[in-house]
Length: 381
Image (tube, rainbow, N blue to C red):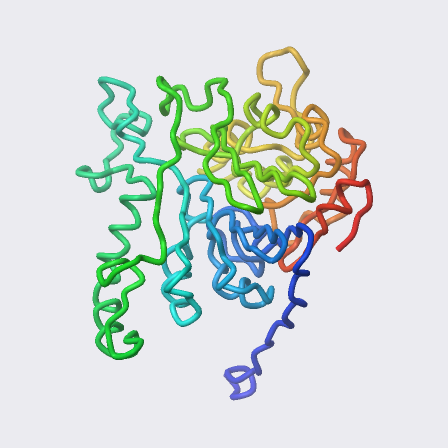
């Protein structure tokens, strides 16, 4: 193998312009679905409201994309995790660790909202609370098989203890005193908090009809959450951000469900996951994974176009139909699957537009959209 092949120059991505300090802007940082190698980053979005930054999810690629998007860590107000699949949390802990030098530690504390510990919700009598009972299926880490955002953060701190202990003995000593972002030396950088769920909700009743719950409010945004349906994951959330310039809903991973439509009703923009089901199934045709992927695509995600007949068993509304039912002005497709180029932007756009008359945007990494313009029926970057 030649030296030329081994030492090709690395392409450095161009940085985006800094988002405006006024208005509300959606910045797509990662737009691919699943823990699959691809050039796109995994699921992560930012909402920038009059300069303040709010993150939704923390998929692989967040660390680099945040920098490439010219976002200011010192302006990060909060993070919202939709669910604990790896493609939504892979960069969670390390994102905060590597940004320690940019932390305004005297004033900046970042709440992180996400799912609670699933096994605490039931159902009663389950052999594996928080997960489906399946024969001949082992339980990994049986002492704590379904940690929530609080427990996961503590476990990650333990996993990175060597690095963290080294850091406070070398570089992380402002004024000569140790400073741990995890809170052992005073005010922590992040405060993980579990989002409340209604009584009776659990893995076998994952998205009972509910009123959205307010999880966060400051001088720029009010954030509400609802349970969505992403079997067998529980809890899984969608979040709505109401800002002075418009309202945005992030679906998280979900099949179509009433809670999501209720949360998005009256909103300006819906940022929704999507699976081009036919093309996705073709990837596994003839393999021993075909049956399990078929079930997951059709029961745990939002298809590009509706499958089945309305009113009959097995009907699954497509992403455009969901946006139409909610009455939003614009639909932004993210968490795309497949995201390897076999499904073109035109196909995603046409499929969603076939069931939705509003603005459709097929998302890509490092794209920014003015929510105020979308709320007024204009598509503006």
